[in-house]
Length: 133
Image (tube, rainbow, N blue to C red; front, side, top):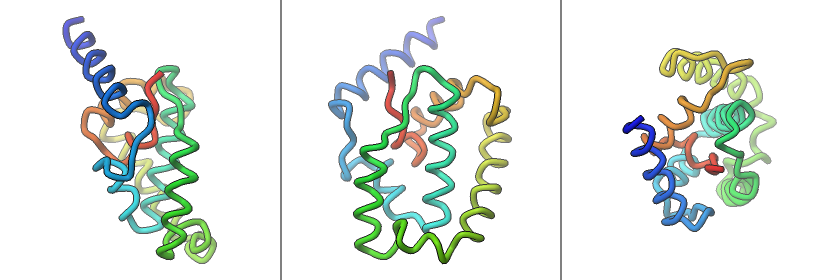
């Protein structure tokens, strides 16, 4: 219970510090911005899975749109993704397997709150797309 209270306090502080919206200066956002296109889409897919399977998080669609626009300007956004479809599918498969092994979860039909909490505490690229409820 003590661990849960400490985690809740950390999330609250993180939400207050960012004002609910992450800036491009946030290290987790920078990780996403600088990733290869296949890794970027794999991380977005994982963040979306967490948000869909945990009531404590929602997916940051506004940040997704901002990141995509910025990545398009440097040739790594949705405009380049079509040519990399096979690489994106392969990276997503590998990333999903890694995520499931890391957190000992399944991506569907499972509560992913603990995995989301761990990603947020780690400051991972996945966490950049998660908005605490």
